[in-house]
Length: 231
Image 1: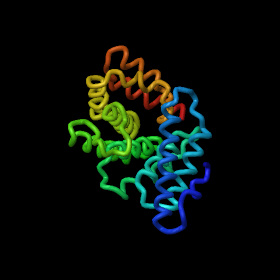
Image 2: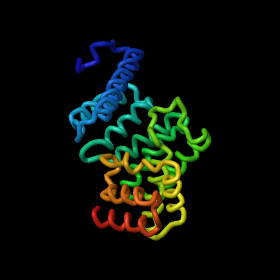
Image 3: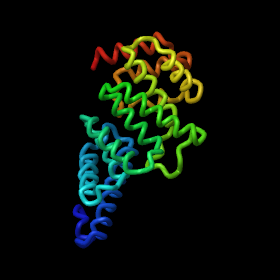
Image 4: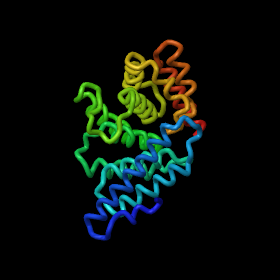
C-alpha cells in the first residue's frame, strides 16, 4: 500500500511506529535500487524513497537513520543535492553518538563536491579515527556497511587535501594514495561506474593504479587540474 498511514492510529505511539515504517520502507528501496545492476539506476525509485524518508522525519524527527538514508538518497539523484546531503548527515551525527565512520565518510564526500575541502579533510579524518580505533573495521552497529570503506575514505581525504592546496603536490595526499595502493589495489576497478562522486577522471585514476599500483604526486596534481577544468 502506498499510504502506510492506514496501518496506524493517530496517537503519539502510533505516529512513532508509522515514522519507523516509512523509514524502513525508504531504506529498503534505496538498498534494492542500489544493488540492482541496471544502469542508470531507476530515479523514480530514489524519488519514492525520498518521499518516504521525508514523511518519516515529519512524524519522528529524531530518527538518525532516516536522516542518514535520506542523505544517501539525495546523493544518488541525477542532480545530487549535496547541500541537503551535508545537512542531513550533520543532523544524523548530532542525533546519535557520533561514532559512525560511514556517516563521517559520506559527509566528507558531500563536502568535497561542495568544494569545502578543509571540512572534507576534517570529516574524513574523523572517519579514519573511528575505523582505526576498531582495527580498521566498521562496527556492527553502524547504519550501513560499506565494502572497502577505509580505502574510500583515504581517497576522499587525499583528493580534498590536494584541492585545498590548489592542486600543489602534497606529501599528506600522496601518503593517503600510497596507503590505498598497498592495502586495496582493487579500489579503482570498483570505482568504475560509481556515479556518487562524479569525478571526471575516474578512468585515469584506474589507469594510474593499474600501471604501477601507486599514484604519484605529479599524477595527483594533474587529476585535480583536470577535474577543475571540467567542473
